[in-house]
Amino acid sequence: MKYLGNKVGNGLALGKVYIIDTKIPELKEVKLTSNEEITKEKEDLKLVVENVCKDYEELEAEATSDDIRELCNFYKILLSSNSLITSMEEVIDEEKCDKLTAITKVMKRKAEELSLVDNAYLKERSKDIEDVTNKLIRKGLGIKEIDLSKLSEDTILVAESIPPSVLLSNNLGYVKGIVAEIGGKTSHVAILASTLGIPSVFGIKEVSKTLTDGELIYVNGNEGYIENNLTDTKISEIKEKIKKEELLKASLVDMKDKPSLTKDNKSLLITANAGDLSELDRLLEVNSDGIGLFRTEFLFLNRSVEPEEDYLFNVYKTFAEKLNGKQLIIRTLDIGGDKKCPYIDIKDEQNPFLGYRAIRYCLDNKEFFKVSLRAILRASHYGNVMIMYPMISSLEEVYKANEILDEAKRELASKNIPFDENIKVGIMVEVPSTAVMADMLIDEVDFFSIGTNDLIQYTVAVDRLNPTVSNLYSFYNPGVIRLIKKTIDSAKDKKDKFVGMCGEMAADPLAIILLVGLGLQEFSVNASMVLKVKKLISMIDSKKAVLIANKALTLKTAKEVEAYLDGEAKKIYGKYY
Ligand code: PEP
Ligand code: MG
Image: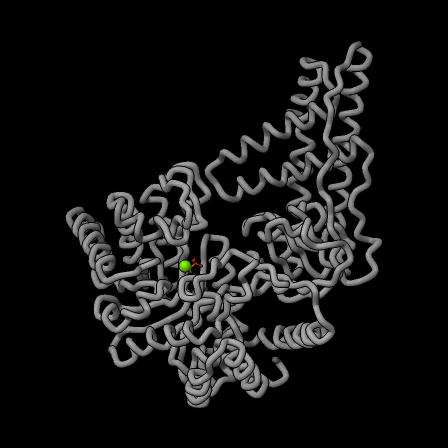
């Protein structure tokens, strides 16, 4: 069975499940009755904190990467601060309680302080505090730490939430993958997993209860899913895939400075999807042809109040300048669906993915929408910026959005604030009605970007987050392919217009052949996939791909399409596939 999650990246892995229970036993507060007990408890407290601090010191000294050193140092500084111990001692004195209660109370306060800070990085650090608290408690109770040195075969760590401290260990040789129910992109554990190159998938609900210790699973960190109940044939296929992935990885180093061309020198754009500043460095490192999708909602989600226009402008300007003339497609807010925001009033809905989402909310909240539009417009003065509206389902929405954009432009012009008057405006094609109407919509916009993550969900009527129906969610569904073809065809003979794709399908090795054949001009993929996609495209002859796409269009089922493309991929990619 396949379980979908959020991809954290780092490749593919096969290994046996090792469920780590990071929970600590329920603690009962113990009341102290004498001054001697109180003095003893405070001494014990000091010892516990000192010992944990020493553990981090040792880990820091042995650390093999800066990320790990930095994290150990963060923990060490936190624990060695006098005010922390003093606060814990005060709790023991005032409440006459045991050291573990004091630790829990003070650390909880600390985590709350950080979680209220309006900053995604510090918010994530509040989870690290939970990790340190648990370590202190385990130390106080004399519970042994998770010992990875005993592992003797390829292992996938599975937990509700993987504490970063687990990855600080030096015994990660057999740890081939990580799977967790919770954990954000900016979480320390995600950063550490990337540093260590461990394939990871997060966000799979109940996974630590669904899987059993010792069962063999496949982790696809690139696409964000895991699979269990593997047949022998499947296992051999996966092993082969992992080998080839390693071979492909080794061949990517020299792709960075090569132009994005097919085998027959047809020029394409391979851009990156981005969400926040932390991704900017990564996509600059791989030298992508710009950004094909800036998911601006991440600037709105990790906060307790609406971001101001200047804040948004500064982020967009930084991106625009750093990209140095390369394209930057900024998508206006795609809120709603599975993305909730405390200060945006979207009521709970029966079908949030079919509800009050993205452009629908923005068109109803004109002044709120204009803040984003002005910020993007202002940034357009500093680079090659384009605007993209998400979840468009009709022409009327484009008319309305453009009217509001015109108002925003007039407002800036009246204040003599510079912006690109000819800024390109495009839409995401992620609703079937939009794909069907593409021939009409193209006259109103400069570009389309096909959002297959949603387009597949809406075309096949399959919730993209629901693992039970994930077998229906396929890039190769003939209905989906027809909609993609219609979208691309509608812009084919239009001068200065282009069609890109920013859904996950753009990074799929089989789909890439089909998409090159259908004439897709821009592939926007995760920064970690840019070089791989560039390499794959460099092996495809675009004329041959047209013939392959034509043949694929005659096939009647997703299975047939996939099998056919798989055969062609073997011929095209050779030893890499
Ligand atoms: C998509 O739907 O394909 C897409 C890129 O948008 P998101 O995944 O942010 O919904
Ligand atoms: Mg989408």
